[in-house]
Structure formats: C-alpha cells, structure tokens
Length: 338
Image 1: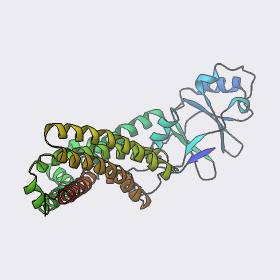
Image 2: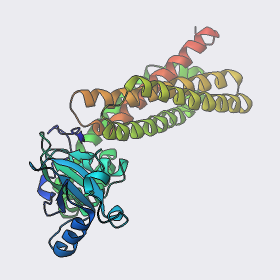
Image 3: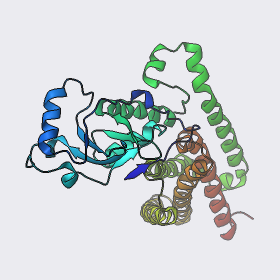
Image 4: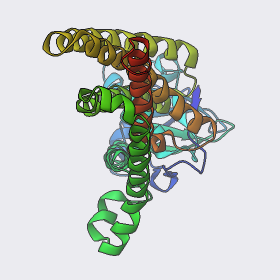
C-alpha cells in the first residue's frame, strides 16, 4: 500500500481536510465473495456516504485492498474479493494537506481517496465531491497567489464578503514589493546612463527583454511548482537539466529571431546586443524559476509564494542587469564607449 504523506507541514497554505472525511462506506472482509458484496450494497445502499469503491479490510480493520463498483458487477459471484482486489492502494493520512489529496486523485484517476493512520488502519474516505471542492478552492488560491494576494482561508467566500479595508490589507504587501522592485529597476537603468546616451535604442527594448524573461520564467515556474506538488520525490537534477535544455532551445530560437530582425531593421551591433541579451536572460529566468521554489520548498514554505509579483520583481531586476551588462561590455569592446 502506497501512503502519500507529502504535504503535511502546517506552514503550507493548504489545510487538513479530515473534517470532510466520511466513514460510512462499503467495507468488507477479505473472505467475502462478490455475491456478499452485492448483497451488502443492495441492503445498505441508503446508508453509504460514498460508494465509488469497495474497501477490503482484515480482522484488525487494516486496509488491504480496493475494488471498484464498475468491476464488481462484471465478476463471477462466487469469487472472493481477495482474489480480484487491487492491492496497490493510493491512500493518505488524516493530516495530509488538501491540495495533495486532490492532486493524487487527478494523478491516479481516482473518484475517492481512502484515509489510513500510520499503522495502516482504515479511517475513512475523502469522496468525489470533497475532491472537487478542493480543486475549486485551490484553483482560486493559485490565481490569487499569482496576483500577490495571500492569507484567505476560504478565498471564494472571503473575497465576496470582505470589507474594503481587509482587501486593501491583503493586496498591499506585494504591491509594495513591486513598487520597491520598480525603484530598484530604475536605479539599475540609471547606472547605465552612459550606454543609453550612446545607443538610445537600448531603452526601446527594455520592455521586450523584461517580458520574454518573465514569460519564460512564469511558464517554467508554474509547471515546476505543480510538478513539485504532485511528486515530492522528484529527481531535481534530472528535472533541472531537462528544463535548462528546454530553456536553451527557446532562448536560442528567440535570440536568433530577435538578432536577425533587429540587424535588418536597425544595425548589426544592436542585433548582437539584443540577441545575446535574450539568450542570457532566458537561461537565467529558467534557472531562477526552478531554484526559487526549490529553496522555498526546502525551507518548508509553500513554493507558490515564490511565484507571482515576487518572482516578477526578481526576474525584471536580473534581466536589466544582464541586458545592460552585455550592452556596456559590447559597446566598450567596439570602442563606442571609452
């Protein structure tokens, strides 16, 4: 039996959903026949809170197997459930984070998730409607996090009923971080005033450099955070190398496209600067998109906090430093700046 313990840390955004666990489900012993199970369902069907699966337990009420309702009516009635039950069970603990429960249901295509304690004793089930509610709530939370809004325990209802003062208090922290990031970015640009005065067109490409780095970083980070949520045993080195290869491929295509286009429309020197900057900022954006959530995860902090406005600020500042660093170096090398 595979028990999925991941996501139990209380510091995570998600909360335990043990209060939504149901215990009135079909339970049978290992020696029960298919006929016995069918009779149980017929006689007590109105008592069950979830009937997606039949749960097979031993004499001590340890979960030993699962049988789906769909399979039940296709089997010979004289067969014993222990002969046909699935022994590889996906289960969770009562303290497992709600998002982890929902992701396991999606990953393994399950309509309900059984709950066992650390010794394997059956506790109950998280049924389909609970999993759907979790998915809805987590989707709202994720959208809010990407917008820099945190700390709502029930986002859908809280936002609808919250006062203007509460909404301001929830939204202002990350906006302030964005403002500080903008000031730092302006400071970075001001330090390269000589390069801008020499090649004024450099300023025209600041939005493009920032956008490409942020777009690639956001794509990589979103996929990585979701993957990390599903698979806590993820082989980071292999995953990082794969994403770096993807990032290098995207960076190479974008840098060549930008470099050639700008060389034709303006100048070869400007094309080299912009193309090189696209390549470098894209690679760094991919690396940061993986390293930041990973650091948060290792520190037992929700990796999703590393996304949204916070990540955007970091990427924008790094992109500007790389962009103007490459521009200044190139202009010095060509003797344009002495």
